[in-house]
Image (cartoon, rainbow, N blue to C red; front, side, top):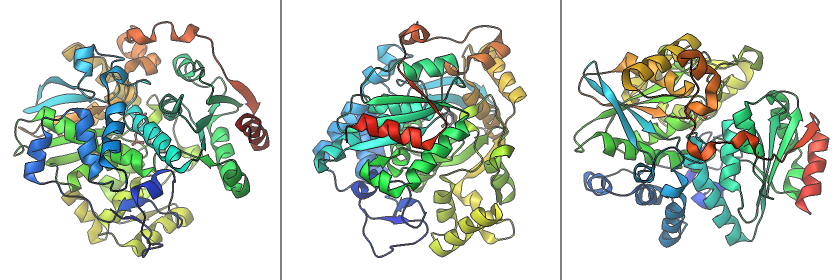
Length: 483
Ligand SMILES: *Cc1c(COP(=O)(O)O)cnc(C)c1O
């Protein structure tokens, strides 16, 4: 399997999965995609229907990875997707499913359900991919005799998922910047209570953007980056995307009895990583009717799928909402879909994303390309704070189920795209306990707290407070890498 850049540079080069595993952007600023998507035959789909999550992950990853020996890859997926890692919310029996499907009911003739992706260690769907990444990175580094210092900035979900995936891993350290005193008590405790010596929490005196600017400044110091082996695990990482393809198959198998049936998925979206994996599953031949992109008030993606206009926002135009993990101004994985939409024409992708840099966006409305969005099954919708509160209340009253704010955005938008007879699967992306304030507003009660997290906020915390200054962060890294 060869990987190429969406912007076409190095077209004659060969990149394997392991070549791009630890990297981010391609040299030309594009994103990596396989040279062609593997197609799944009916016989394969039938055989996969009964596999465990770990073995299904092995089969799907094997179609994209040909430079890790099969027995090693199988060991990695079995180590990653074990009930013990996904039993933080459910009892052991249900946890064995890894991503159980929770049926809500029939609405407008469509069976409506939630695909539970947030039963992992940090109670958000990012664990699904990040836990695999942790094991893949450790494996790849050991093979090369290398080490890696992961530097990141977080306002919550991504940082904690990365830390829980990398804790205790050989050859890996994590330096995670977060805005000092700006995260919820629960999220702060989740990260800062980690005592593993390879995890470093840096509380930056500033806001999230200050932390992100520091990461950019350090990454742009190429000499420092090379000397201290600085890497990232952001959402453009190909391995993260491909790991997420697996649960679309698993969700499909749980919602159907035969491979003649079609289903739709609704995906609470921000950086377009999660729904991009759904697009890939569909390109592989999974019978998906619609992929519904749900946004919050930050509706860059909804605007595109309704109008054909992609208009990124400035940081100051980005709303801080009660579904904060979807508060994005541009969708960093969107280029992958645009590449397929434009029939994989790298010159046009390059031009369009130059327009994004220079003019703030592009307009495909008048071109025949936008009409093709339908062929790919994409539709969209947006949700507001009032919609979220209403959805949380309604689902609790009607189905006795508590959902978080991001899943609520998904549910609200899913209801606008139901079709009789076609199961609608809403991806559950986080647990309500992470966004307690809105739960209290909607339900006038406390969010459910999984037993594994009782007393979390009282645990001792380990973190370093630093001013919003790149040099001091560099000094801290130097002092803690022993290099
Ligand atoms: C990251 C995140 C999202 C958005 O996912 P993308 O892959 O960025 O589209 C949605 N909900 C939650 C809870 C998240 O953490």
